[in-house]
Amino acid sequence: MALRFVWPLHRPARAAPAAEAAPPADANLLLAAREDPQQLLARLNTSADGLSALQAQLRLARLGPNQIAREQPVSWFKQLVATFRNPLVALLAAMAALSLLSGDRKAALIIGTMILFSVSLRFSQEYRSLRAAEGLRRLVHTTATVQRHDPHQDITPGLAADLGLHLEGAAAGPQEIPIERLVPGDVVRLAAGDMIPADVRLLQAKDLFVSQAALSGESLPVQKQALLPQAQWSLTNPLELETLCFLGTNVVSGSATAVVVETGERTCLGSLAQSVTGRRSRTSFDRGISEVSLLLVRFMLVMAPAVFVINGVSKGNWGEAFFFALSVAVGLTPEMLPMIVTANLSRGAIAMAHQKVIVKNIDAIQNLGAMDILCTDKTGTLTQDRIILKLHLDVAGQDCAEVLEMAYLNSYHQTGLKSLLDVAVLAHGDL
Image 1 (cartoon, rainbow, N blue to C red):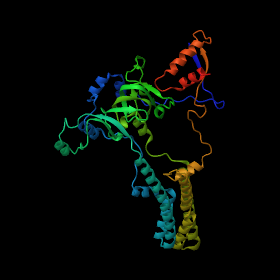
Image 2: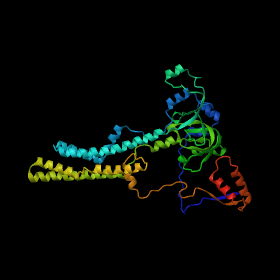
Image 3: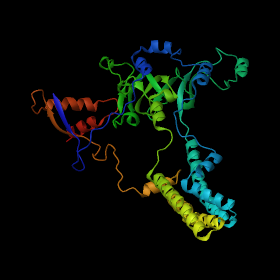
Image 4: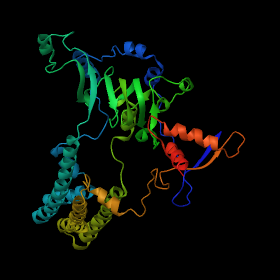
């Protein structure tokens, strides 16, 4: 028996094959996926009732919080210093210093004022944006439902105080705690709408469907279960194993109980975050500013010595020739350029702020404005996000109503999440 489905397009288009975005195989996750649940609990030194508060805090102190790499907020001083790291600002600062050493305080004051205005404008705009973004991040508090057993069975209040542990208010049973405090061995409960708080191995699952689009790019939810099918024992990609769920994914439907295997940077998402988090690459705007600055420096290195030699030889007053050459170098430097550039970028950032968009680096405004074509790819962009059932064939390739009937009954009585295939079968059967 065979069913033939088609995915209707909004317009004729040839889609490029999707790349398989899977993290490298993790030996610990693979072992946890194939182990018997009781063996896994014993290896993690935990139980179906979870960890105690003492065990959890000791592991948290040893392994660190359940956080992945991300850009950390910087202090105002570091932000101010970073604002001065601009080739044009450095060039103007050098000219101001030369003017001051030569006794031309008026020129040094004017150049210094231009630098101060430019840096202050950029710093105030970026600092406010960074603080606003950090404030929004602090508003988001993600918790997980964790199973704890009696915290006082293995530690007394006096010993807890000596160790600096905080067990007050802790009790046996399910608890809501921030996901940052999860450790390997914690037993968590999952329900529809929950975010998977770490890389976990399922102990129990009922009609569990998880969206793994953040890691695999697959738009359809994936069914998960507590027992690994025999056909998956040879797989080496953790994302393909039905007994594992991963940090950064979310539960679409169903419920489950799972034990935490990996946390923080040791998770699949954490390893990916480490590879992409760091210093940002130079943009075309950064390269353009550097090229303009180098061009001005080259002009000064050629013009100033030439003017100095010619004026000194022709007039015989080398002191006057030096100051004249210095004034030529200062004249070649566009003192207003940094302030003009910063003012225009700030206006763009303010316009974006009116649209409720936070711009943390105002140089991004130029990158956005210089864009000619923006290409994006998302499931449902080229397609209608639905499937149409066209044919229902038997083993001989002939149209068969019994095939449709069997498929309809299967989709109709589906207890888990109805996929797009189920929806297409039901829609065709109702015609």
